Length: 217
Image (cartoon, rainbow, N blue to C red; front, side, top):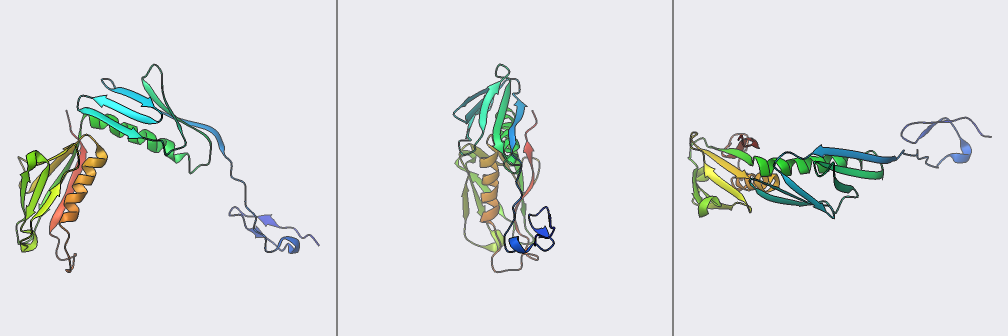
């Protein structure tokens, strides 16, 4: 009564097997006992880790990031010259958060060392978009978008500054130490000038990110 059958990789089986028909088979997934990622701490940077809260200080200021929501072990090694992230009994998809944490910390290093810069272009076909910087670089006012009378006021997030590019016409430069706050400030400007009730393939007016990266020393 027990006929041969073969399990496939997705947990299903091939071949008739009357006693087990209707039951689902699940393959066991191997867990990794321990996985570790490490990144070096650049020169001229002070870093402290306490209860998975990472604080990084450099010439452009101090940044802090909280990783308490992740089931990892985060600590300094090699006399404070290396950051290590460790994870126990994790599946392959869960292990990806180790590399993510290291990338976040590397972004903190770059931010306090070099600062991040986003360049945005004012794009228009007929009605010129006028940008005015106020509040000491903390606010940008956009006028005449598609000929509208409404003034679009966009406030930068904390620690982010906006200014007009000196060498390029109709270009804004957004700088900051925190990559999240800097990119989100650029997104706020982008989203303030969206074309409504028209074909966006034809009406391409707006403020677009043209390039982004770290500032060269």
